[in-house]
Amino acid sequence: MKVLLEGLLPRWFPGWQVGQHFLCVAHQGKSDLDSSVPRKLKAWQYPGDRFVVVRDNDNADCQALKRRLLQTCESSGRPDTLVRLVCQELEAWYLGDLQAVAMAFDAPKLDSPAQRKKFDQPDGWQKPSVELARMVPSFQKGSGARRMGQALRAATHNRSVSFQQFESGVRRIALELEWLG
Image (cartoon, rainbow, N blue to C red):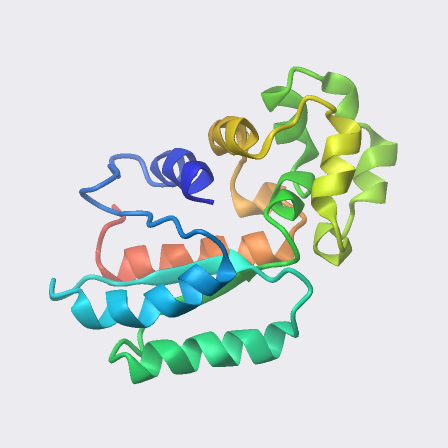
């Protein structure tokens, strides 16, 4: 996720720099994120900064998971934190923009009408990582995230609703902070 966002956010928001306008903090899995978020939110002392918590849903009850994360943020003193879930895995965001996948992996045939129809609702796939590995046998999560961070287009070109929700939430925060021209 961190690798993807560090490539994607400066493309969506020209001028944004890692460490100056945003900071992505990687976690070692869901339990690490769950235990780390309250500590980080309470410890962060820079006024005006905003937080976005984004994680894979991984077959959890998405409404219950989001409620729990929002409650964690509120009880940590940061009720303004944006919580977004990727349904089900990050690779669903990739499958939502097959033109970007085709470009990132130099495989133009991946963006075909049949594939677009197959992945019309990428958030509905239980294991999009398996589908992506089937399409791109050389796909690896780290290098794939780097490539997709340079290739994914704006949410208007992506069929993943969770991707669209993530982008609209981040854009709202950027507007509130007056970071968009």
